[in-house]
Length: 101
Image (cartoon, rainbow, N blue to C red; front, side, top):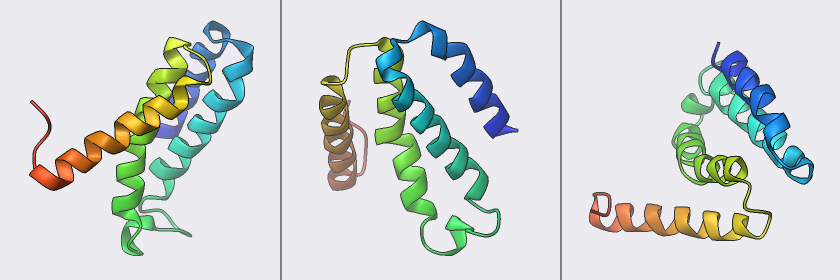
């Protein structure tokens, strides 16, 4: 179900985004569909192999920020800034144990 909802959102957003960014949007869709399906589903079962935390961090960290960057159409140059901001936020949370206020 989640993969179908992500597909519907991706199809709805595709015409609104610059054609140069379409591969990024579809790549992010495929990654989000993979993580949502195979978190506990066979054959990967990421949660049972020690990769569950990594996949959740990636899906709700850098990937969420990259999806927001693609939706706002700033261009490819902003991807590096988005990833950097995500890593800085994750680092701060891991050091202090709480989000930045």
